[in-house]
Amino acid sequence: MLRSVLTLLASLTIGFTAIAAPHGMGGHGGGMGFMLAEKLKTELALNPAQTAEWDKIAASAKAARAQARTLHEELITATKAELANPQPDLAKLAAKKDAIHTQVMALMKPIQTQKLAFYQSLSAEQKTKV
Image (cartoon, rainbow, N blue to C red; front, side, top):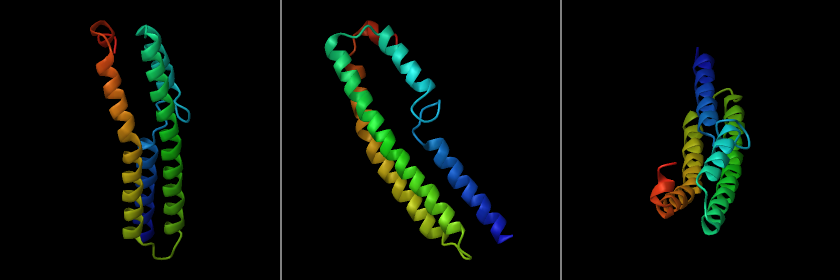
């Protein structure tokens, strides 16, 4: 019974980690999310300064996603290792999950701030296309 509960907890942890991972809708590398962003970039008809800012934000987001992916993989590895123990320390695992979540949020917050500032820099006509 205990092993079933632990397996369920591990599945939920890994499942939520996979859902929350910033891989975009299409999996690793962005997939559909990347294609939609490129389509929007074209539709907005950005001026050179806006294009430079867009590219800067995209590069920052890509780097943050890579770091977040590494942290999520670390959590999955730690989860599997802890659950392999005869008496896994679920509190330790929860603390690890919370710490990684905090790190990921710290990585993503500046990107969000950059995106909001970029949106404010768009013309009224461009904003209707977002």
